[in-house]
Length: 301
Image (cartoon, rainbow, N blue to C red; front, side, top):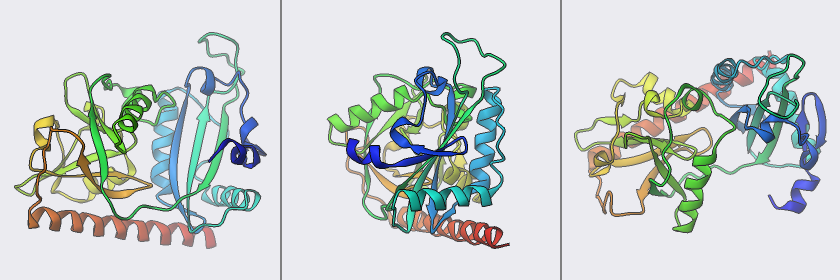
């Protein structure tokens, strides 16, 4: 979206439809301090996919920041109504949309003190989105700044994404799509906005642990929670050798990764590894269909 387009778009902010470019106060702590949490949700035909999982993760983040909101995010009918309004008011036309739900602590005085009369700001934006079904995510390994592993960075989507932004800039400078992040111990945490998995030659599928800095991604949780052969474990750079790598998040689903460096070399994948990722993709697509059908049924009920 360019600057001209953004001026014409509207957002839902704490119950009101407002111009997106003027949606927040300069005193909002989400802007001044990154004092916020957010969720990015794939919307299909007006239905927010995996909405209960997103709400659960959002609530964990709000509790971690000791933030309370006067809005029932579990009310999917209210969310669907907001989606419908934003589609209409922004003249959008697409089968899929990327919805961003951001909750900040709201406006307050200068400094860090949390005042009792602060009212959280809830902002929801929507943009047309076309899922990319094919093609690898070309990624570098970013080691200039490492991602710390703490409760506030691993159990929620925090508004403080400085390291991720720097890594994405480095990827852009090298002609890549994304970057693999490391924690202080040198273990992989994931990509800038996605989880990372490796299918090893022996058929084991590994992904970084939450305690090592991985985000609790919705797609990640589906694969780790449903399939015994997908294991969360310490994940160092040596595991990139001879592995079939793939990334996951709720917008891209599952996409293969190609490393743009000498770390992994030009590894060829075995038939068994290709078969495994095909099975994982099929499992995820079934989960998408189940989520869509269940949520749509709830909206119609």
